[in-house]
Length: 401
Image 1: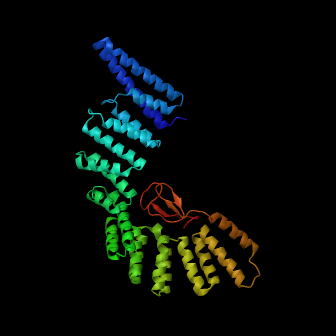
Image 2: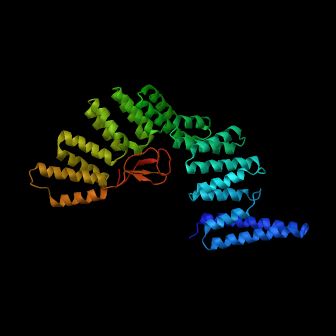
Image 3: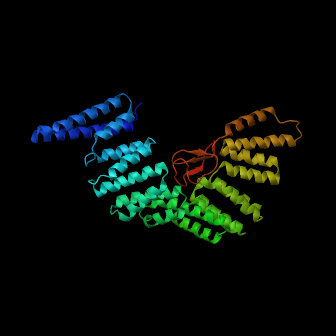
């Protein structure tokens, strides 16, 4: 089946060809009959291309239209569009040929020349030739007086530097336009977190802390920066300060309460404050009755007061906020309770229920990107699918939290 985008571009090419033919016919009537031959040749090329199109031979059709379209002010947009089409079809090498051929034409305007350079940079990025793309984009930033082209070049350059994990360079490029473009503050905050992680690995904790505080200045809802700052506080033995940091996360992003629980548990237990940990869990439960919080409370009560008290607590909480993960944990508690009571083996009905909950939970993702729907078990701060930062969050609901 012929691609819809391909059909649209080729029909646009046909329309341009028709327009050229019409103008040539007008000039022929005004000037001389000698201009008829090029018009007829153009017409033959277009009918040949159309025949390829109807026979579902898109590559041959595209090549025919390219050959038929001489490069001038009327056809340059069609050449650019055809280059984009090749790139989106995974044939960036052909897109490079088309766009480089356009740049070799001396008659195009400065505005069009810059537009083609942007497309050529995208072609090189698609091919993985990042050094050539970077040179093109830097040249545009130095020489272009068009604000739109300069901003587009900065966006592409930032994307390229991000792929190269050149976090500081990306920050240097984007810093001057952060006030005018607030959506860039979130990725910039995550680049600062990436720099902080590198600095922590090199034992430059003071510099890491500085970058994390700057990340929160750029994006006050950056949960990742708060988590890393709490870890730095714990590494220095400042457990109360770590808890204060973590206490900000529910206000930053309620959905990330499950993400903070392991760090919260470590901070309280290292501070020898189990009662404080329990009270904190109850406060969180009032804010959001997530499965992870219920299970954390169940584990605490189980360890301190025994399995039956844990069953009582979990049963009560799940009646208000049922979830598959909570039910699975409750079944585990019942099985343990029966074993402790001296039964030779747990009730077969419980084992059957456990088998079903295990089957439902196995390989079930725990996190999902709020933008594109990408799902994964572990948390990733940048979505591998849409490449947006901070959009992956714990799944909420009966099958999640």
